[in-house]
Image (tube, rainbow, N blue to C red; front, side, top):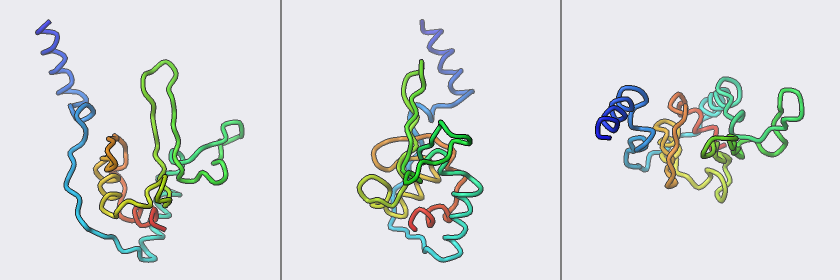
Length: 143
């Protein structure tokens, strides 16, 4: 039994690592703000809408239509996927500027930490591909 535990520990260490189990490193929050300049807003729109396709996950789709277009009014509203036969669920959270249900009440630094460090600041943890994003995305989320 001890041998199996040791082998499992080594397998995790040398493959996916321990971060999926213990969560990402979190840095302390600051009062840092990002200026929403026209150039940053345009870059953010380009990144979120054209290059990275943020709303492919952070929006609900009509799967009965060709190309599964976004359902009107759900752009950025999030999406939840349950995977049949597998435990858990995949959640793309609401990133709209709504202060009650979205990211509207978040500080700029909370958004920055969530996107760049893949750490949800609202008492949940998430692993994602968001480390690729830049301040332009944060500025666009603020618009």
